[in-house]
Amino acid sequence: MIGRTLVAVELPVEGRLGSYRLQPPGRDAIEGPLNTILNGVFHLLGAWMSEESRDTPILHAAMVSFEGRRLSLLGDKGFGKTTLMLRLIEEGAVVEGDEHVVIRPGGAITRPRRLHVKEPSLALVPALADAIRASPSITDWMGSRIFALAPSFGGSPWEIAERAIDHLVFVEPNFGGSSALSPISRDTAFARMMQTAFMPSESVGRAAALLRTLSATANAWRLELGGLDQAVRHLRKISDPA
Image (tube, rainbow, N blue to C red):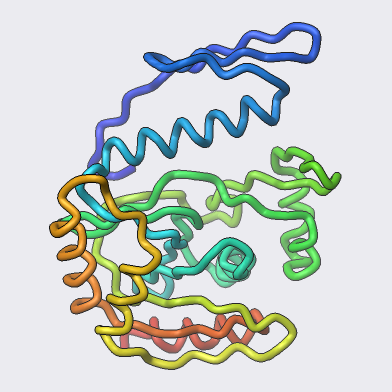
């Protein structure tokens, strides 16, 4: 994380007879099977992020730098953002994350978290399947594996910094169909962010002003996400510095 001083936090875990206990500093202990402990860590990271961003909005979005431009792809879970990130990594893009983006006065910064890749997604990126299978994984309640993949696995460095966003891309699923990209107005972009952003408990007006500034400075697009190759071509086109 460029430009930030990071503090190491120890998270001691004790285990016995299939049950585990995690004692976060200054918080209640978390007890249960390994999946419960892992989910507890994710909730803990989310809580810390919210506390550090108490007066700034948080977007549910991926962040990627492509052809010299920084793109934030916004969309709900299951819309295909992570699979698209994998395809962009194949194209040499630099991915920062696919979960949360904090909007700050100096720009935007991505929450550091590995990509969570579901097993069915491997069929959509066959060239990466072996590398993904070699990553750490857990098994969900339906018996499907979820892999934790560092964005640097494609060879590009995993660097996170607070920088400006050049393009806001609002992703909508069109599974089985074609990918299409169309511009949207700055007012529409602002309204969509206000509807979906995690707003702080205090200084809501300031947070809204940050979103308004972002919508006024970044180009905004609607991406109907179908075929991955088509989506990459669209994103490459708008990212071309020329």
